[in-house]
Image (cartoon, rainbow, N blue to C red; front, side):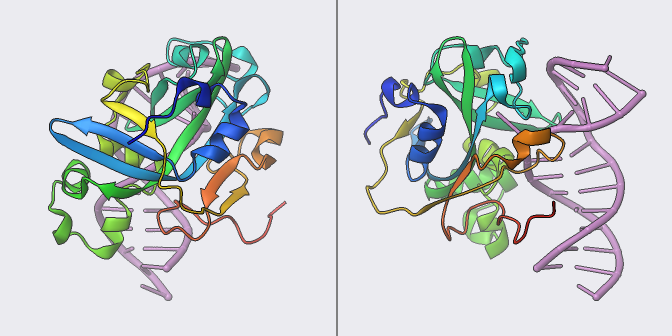
Length: 211
DNA sequence: TGGAGGATCTCCT
DNA sequence: GGAGATCCTCCAT
């Protein structure tokens, strides 16, 4: 399992987002490893991006991590319930990052099933199995990533990091982002990246534009 | 299989 | 006071 170096995250945000598809999210939990292949992400480029928490350089206690060094985790609470994980990119004082929207479980199925549904994996329906990690809040819960423990976490550590993938060929597609309808121009930016035809991708892009 | 509505923290108006 | 980078349950097809 080869950890991605900090230099990877210091590239331009859109390049990092594109390159993250197919990489592995790894968490060391007790004596078990949780591994998920990243299949869907979104880029958030603060200063110019109305949809970002850091639009216009807005700086609050919540998003302080985004202003720090690249290669750290920005974990925030959304709707008061769900934890979502981002990778901070570029560098200090450039509040940009990539939201991890979905992963495909590769190792640690039992732990993920327990974290999500308090059930054994084999007792889950097919639909539930797919719902383990096919959304930003879901993967956060499956991996046990909370803002209390992991906001500001250095991804060079051994407990939570991003690793090189298998090297398989991956077809990456792009689309506008999800869930940001009220964000003006930025909602049209094709800053969502996902692996073509992967069943764990959270949502299919809309068949047609509704504009 | 899909749409409506509720849950409940953080920040802005 | 209200909306949000969401997800779950319930109910109707």
